[in-house]
Image (tube, rainbow over all chains, first blue to last red; front, side):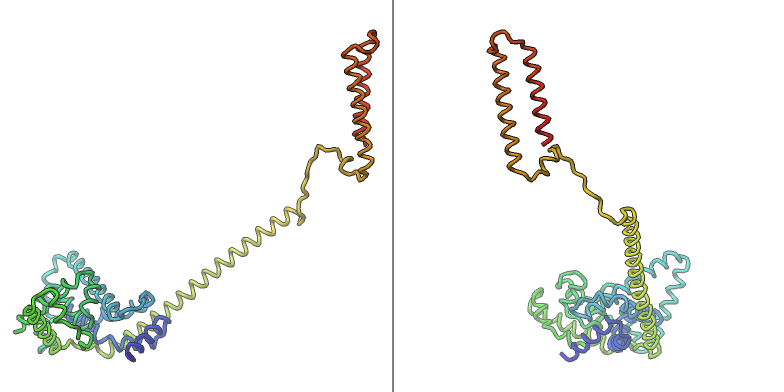
Length: 176
Length: 175
């Protein structure tokens, strides 16, 4: 309860334009949001950019947060930022069709340059489709309940449960 | 990390699967999450976090400047509206010489009657007028019936009557 009260106080401060409150918000969520973006992109440089974009966007959007689960709202913004990035990348790929293979190899090289166990998980995550990967990462990093996730994705809870179950089961098989 | 994820997973899965399948699903889910926990993603660099905080401060300053600019624009628009209204008001005032226009009315009733305070005199006049009209009516009737000795000059009598009527009317309206 004290934690949620503290978060509520921080959010009110952010809405009032208090830089210190934004700083606290960054301290609380930077790690989880970084992990979310990193697991989706597998690229540290891109993750850095997306994380910066997310928090700067929060300055503009925080007034539109009308209560409820802050995590749900935050990860909806994060998810939208990731989708915008994907769309931009696809556009870029279309424009640079000639360099497609070259770019992909560059991305793959960067993705798998972190070494150790993290690398293995990232390689296997890349084998899952983007939506399933996003769902698994949302569940793990946002700490949202299935009900909240289903609401966020505008789909029935049964669909969310089934997709996540299939995704995690496949990931488990890939990791073994 | 998964504190809020401690929902009743088995109960949830049981809504869609049979008991055994639900148990397996929960197990798969826990196992998947265990793998993710065992492979933590890298943490953001301290410098990155500091850069983000600096960027936020910059964005906040820009936002404050924008808010101030919007207030200034609104105040300028309001002031301009007040000035325009004041100028229009002064122009209208000057055109009208600062006086309210006099309302002109017309009446078909003679002014003398409205201005007369002597009610009894007015009543007497009316009584005389009524008597004279009755007398003229009687004479006119006699003329029509040829009661004036049977030899009266009809045209002369009519002329006399008309003259008398004009005189009465003129006296009445003079008050």
